[in-house]
Amino acid sequence: MKLLVAVQVDGEQANAAAVAFDAWDAPEATKTYFTHVAQVGKAVRGELDLRELPCVMQLLAEHKLEPELVLIEGFVYLDADDTPGLGQRLFEALGGKVPVVGLSKKSLPELSSQFEVMREDETPPLIVTSVGLDIGAAKVRVRSMHGRKRVPTLMKLAARLAKNTD
Image (tube, rainbow, N blue to C red; front, side, top):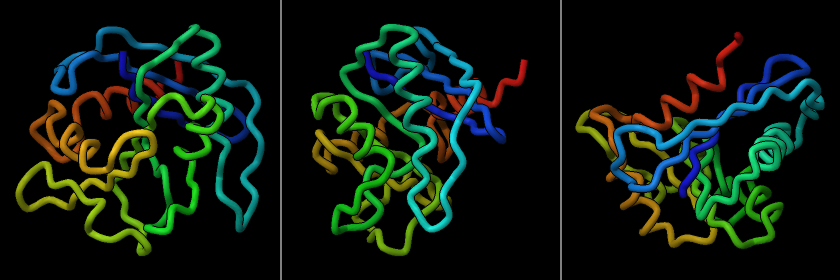
């Protein structure tokens, strides 16, 4: 099972959601998961914001999830020199055994076009970074994900679930 994870931090609390799927081109999730995190730390100015990491780890532990691969909204690396981002930290927290693919709608100036994936003509590319899976393979798989628009269907679903305030 592959897992696409999204976290929504709101003040001192957060929601973490995950969408499980088997096939890269799956139009629907096989299952969804949700965890509310009552207390998250504050972001430290000038440092990498890792507040989402304990939220993802809590979600995985709470639901006893052992995915074969995790996709996150964000970056595995912050530049072409492999400066660690949230995804690299998650990879390390998972013992370096579970590949992590980062997807972002925003680019970073330090990332070249080699990290871009065009999913639709005339739209900005998605930025793909990965660890534990070759970047070329990660880009091919992200390109094949279901959805007619720039952002894959399951990525939209995970974000929507994480924003749930009920």
